[in-house]
Length: 366
Ligand code: PLP
Image (cartoon, rainbow, N blue to C red):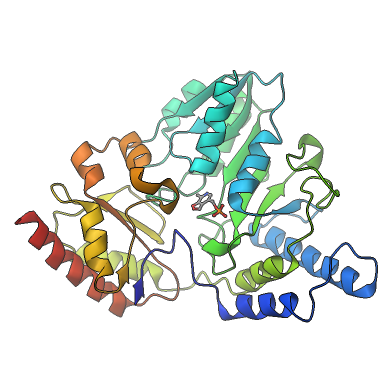
């Protein structure tokens, strides 16, 4: 099998599975228990938080909260920050549904919510961002890397604009497709940053939110007061340890860039790349006149797994993001997404490129 759908989820690495196993069996204890086994597990959790802070390049000050997914981390970031007196909330039109639909819900509840347009390269339109920000903006959420196109938003630039226009606004970024993939130091003016274990060879069902100032956040899940009272629920020690294993194995020196560039250089030129200066991990393509879904299934028959767009948005995949970047209907219908991991090889890229060329020619001649 060739697996080119790593933006959807990744195969857990050996170390992640080993830690998961260890903490599901021998070390199954409740991290809130006051005997040694519980305390040891709490320490293991804290060590994972320190590792996350280190990977982000921020100081660790009990400022990482584990959640049951990045979807939940995004919900916590937004709904836990929002206050009745918030004047204006800004989101990008390219956000993942876990941010986008939360924003729509706030809009339905009467908040002043605005969406910033995307450029044709898939990132946030800076001029529109500047236009939409006003001194009374209270909250901003702009993702780091888009999950459908790999478009990268320049968070440093966005933060410096925000600091000029509305320095007190809270700034959140969904970092799910950036963390552990792009090498960066988190801008110190970012207030909230969400990540997910299963996108970097860790287990599903484990997310985390970096929180610069816990005092500004309210819980959205109530209960026993775990995670500094910001996310109650018995800690998922095994999952968190699986996350630790995945983070310990992060390797920025890999050959992913060459896989992506091989495909781009050798594909039938009727395939257009959606987006510019995108993450090496994601390649969004459109071929006008063929149906991307058909292509996905033709490849599936050859044991090659790719995606039609975001796995999270079902049959309407790709539409919102690609349309927001200005793609016409035929390009949206003809879109596919390939996404890579360090386990992929150039040999696999060669096979997939050949198959894409063969199948697209067949389909376009129908
Ligand atoms: N944000 C982005 C950009 C994603 O790609 C995903 C996963 O598809 C999520 C959030 C949600 O992550 P999780 O599956 O951990 O809820």
